[in-house]
Image (cartoon, rainbow, N blue to C red; front, top):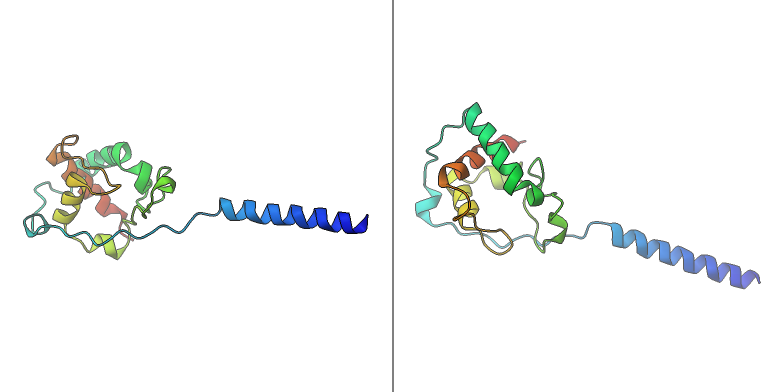
Length: 138
């Protein structure tokens, strides 16, 4: 009887352990380096990063980006869990040290799990989004 109780408790503890492991966020693979053509890398942002632009960019970001990239750009949006690769942290140097043109290119053309917005969002609106995403800097 005592052996059966110990065995049952052991099974319950093992099940609980596996349950907790399955609830922990899985480590995401970092995306491969993303080469951006020089034409875009050196492109100047034609939209001034003023309050109006940032406000427009915020509304567009919430509509198109936040579900994967998160409300504050940390890569923790609700859809991020389903991605094979990490959605990116827009607050850190890896993102913030890139040019506006690089961000424009990646948003416009996408790749892999990152959708292309070339035929969905006008260029000017993508620039507003770039201006807004700059506000995530730590």
